[in-house]
Length: 95
Image 1 (cartoon, helix red, strand yellow):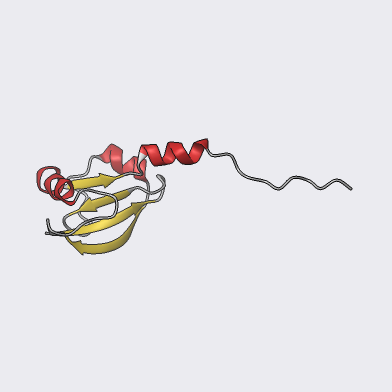
Image 2: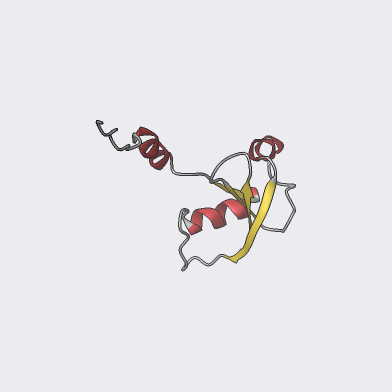
């Protein structure tokens, strides 16, 4: 199964997978508005035996078949962990 992957410009680390290049007819208008301008990233051949870095390939394939699209968003726990970290700074030396 082929998929086309687009990066959303308004939402950081959001990726939209669709079946046919530039065919967003099955993607809800509200989602397209939320993602903003979409930048084509790549075409990918999906195969149940392969793995994706941040998504379950079977869920992606199922969503593409059923809904016509799959939305990959950053892992919430990963975002929260990064937000909780305080920046490390060097102490100001005494003169």
